[in-house]
Image (cartoon, rainbow, N blue to C red):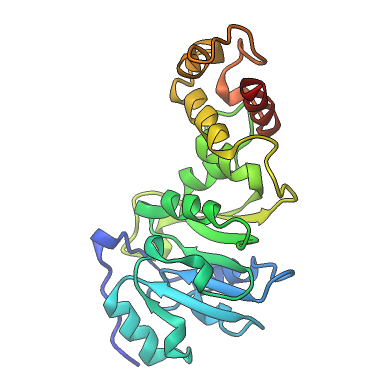
Length: 256
């Protein structure tokens, strides 16, 4: 057994020590319509050990060379399935021939970037199970009418159904983070095509939440003024009051 890997602050590494929590995260994978799984940032493999025994094709991506060497020495994973590199720079469509799930104890410093990249590949990623900073986890699954509901909530919930599974305390990590963590599961919903231009939809959502305390009449002036639009749906509401369906309807109105 190789010596343990030292956690690196610049990589946002916090190694999970609690085996039951690791098992619970692994067991949250439904594996109902796919057989491929990509684990992000396995570190010393505390989560990997519970995934590897499932009836799946597992690949892991790890940016830390020390962790890569540890995994190569201590786990029965084919070397070609241990990818040493940055997840954010991977061409995900080249990893598997069929759809795959994402799982991991995601580094806090890039967790939102991981989710937005996954969103770009939504057609081949049917499920995401991950541990995030608790505040981020709650934002992702929060619904309309809540303070935590925002851009990341709307954009992910456009294509995924989210579920907050459980909270993880600070004391089960080395080193211990300063905040609690939350584990969530995202499963691809049935929306295969947006009934409006996707890039414009994203612009509307971001514009609406850019000044979230203002009504949409004022928050969306950068969109409505160039289009010479003076009246539109939900204009007296604030962004946090609109559902995904409402944002789609609003975008359709602007397109017309």
